[in-house]
Length: 44
Image 1 (cartoon, rainbow, N blue to C red):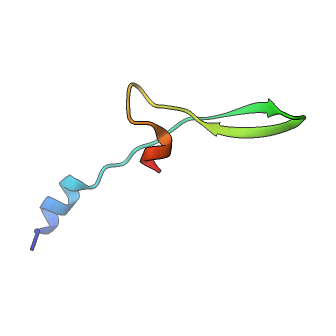
Image 2: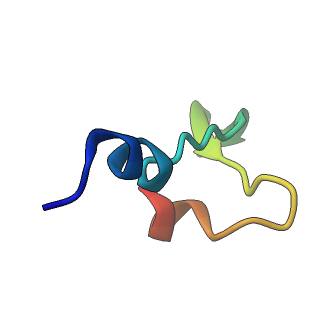
């Protein structure tokens, strides 16, 4: 069983920017890739 310290090391916090674009006369938020990181769709 992993200790609490090992579990803390395994948890990662990722944050992504959101950009709003106009799409078919609607304002739609899209999630952006962070600095050469993983694809946001794979990260969610």
